[in-house]
Amino acid sequence: MNSHESIRAAILPHLKAGDWLTLLLGGLCVVLLTLKLWSGDLADRAVIRSGGKIFREVPLSRDQQIEVPGPLGVSVIRIQQRKARIVSDPSPRQYCVRQGWLQQAGEIAICLPNQVSVELTGSTKKYDSLNY
Image (cartoon, rainbow, N blue to C red):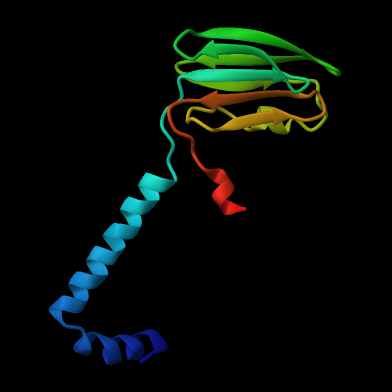
């Protein structure tokens, strides 16, 4: 008998119906709270910044491609199917391009060397700052 089987044999006979119900309700609460607190609403606008200033604010309802000037060159932002992403940037490491598609309010892609960013806004934000 391995250690998992011995633990199971020692614990399972002592669990009653109320214990199982408590475990089930606790697990359900954890899942519901996770879904409620860590998922933001879908975004409806994109705020594009260049050099720390708002360059343009656009609705996500219209597909478009926007060229944003920065100190290193032009960054290209694509709005498509209510999502946004930076498709090209002259920055050396391409972190903002690798960020991929953004679709929830509060998500942001930042190209630091070129000082360009795109942030999605909506009625509520996804609070990533709780992790810090």
